[in-house]
Image (cartoon, rainbow, N blue to C red):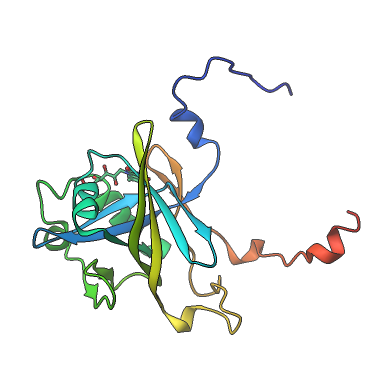
Length: 196
Ligand SMILES: Cc1cc2nc3c(=O)[nH]c(=O)nc-3n(C[C@H](O)[C@H](O)[C@H](O)COP(=O)(O)O)c2cc1C
């Protein structure tokens, strides 16, 4: 089977449906308001210092709150609440209080004013250290200043236990999926780098 090749690449929004990514919720607080939005474009950047990056269009209400407060939190949720991702990713905090509308429970944040979601199995509070324009989005880098996690759903080694939580994966165009514990494989790189 031959691959299709596109050489004039102007807009690759559709190509981002080529692989699933982790859907997460970014929260922020400013102007006396809490807000939450869905993100699929986000990534860890550095272990030490601990840095996390999120890609947000400047028209998002969340962007206004983060630019003002210089803080945000990223929340990771189980697949059971995937509808919440679609809900908060489908309306703007400039028009509606999403916490009230969707009855979203909060946990106490400790280092920032960004709300932590009770439904999150892990969340990072971040202080903004960089904010740059990349095309139609901005890339915001946060220094992780506090980590919250539900100990019961992680293994003794600190890894997410797939017997207890399956994360929310997003394939684009409103399609969500998750992992299955039956596909978990431990592949020792020392062993496999010698030959497969
Ligand atoms: C699954 C999903 C992933 C999304 N990922 C992003 C993203 O990475 N960056 C972004 O700017 N918007 C993303 N969005 C869109 C925002 O979440 C959406 O526009 C939201 O309504 C913005 O809310 P706000 O105006 O209250 O900030 C995503 C939406 C969904 C449903």
